[in-house]
Figure 1: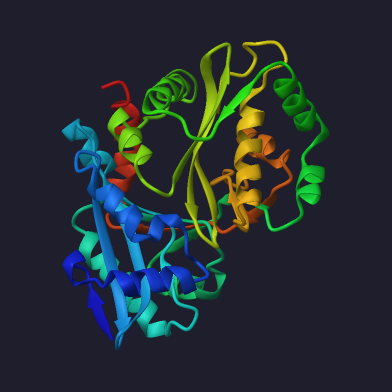
Figure 2: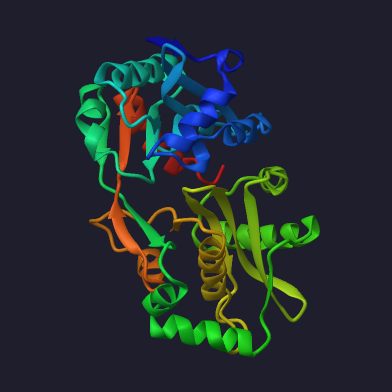
Length: 334
């Protein structure tokens, strides 16, 4: 068993082989995802760790440490995020997965306050090993649509109100753009800024993130237009034979009569996944089980399956984590 953590040591052919074979593969664990994180050094400090058996990769983890321009915020909120969860071979040995998780902790323990995996696949088979290594399981929902069904089955599962909104939107002139220009993407970014800053009060990546993502081959910008304006859309990442992952989505609902961009945006992504033989359209997140979450209710109207793949959480410094939660709240306006 060999542990690798230097990118120049890691064979990308073996990496891609594991991506193709693993049941826990998502776009976020691919070489392309790692390269995207590397392209944005002002936003991310990426890392990759591999456990290798002879000449075969058995487990791999790609993630990033977040960066803040404000040094105080950075100190109190520094965290390592592993979107999608680790990439695991079907026949990984217990000691190999433990070695992978132990190395991740060793590398990150002095750099971040906590480590979090955001799982889009079922890790229940390995949950006890994560817990043995100090990772706590936190229940969290995800919403996924089986796009291997016939299109008739998929459409029949969409709620009648959503289907009505989609039908009215197309009837009254909404237009779809599957290959937008960079100028149209910038217009869409302004919509996201308004949503994050004015409505949901969460930080949003700077324009450079979305500009770089535009040139990633596996990225799909699905935009909707009305009255010669971008009024909604989504950003989806694709992984062949695995799924489409809806990373960002927004729409100017309630502005134009009979025009429902958020509903059309979801419909576009689902249709694209089905038409291009992706088995899953993943809406990426539906909140915690114990909390009411309007976004979850909205996503459920498109006929998806609510799954609880959860998150694994490791606190590198429990005291700093508690202080950090208080500190981030106090510093939100800085």
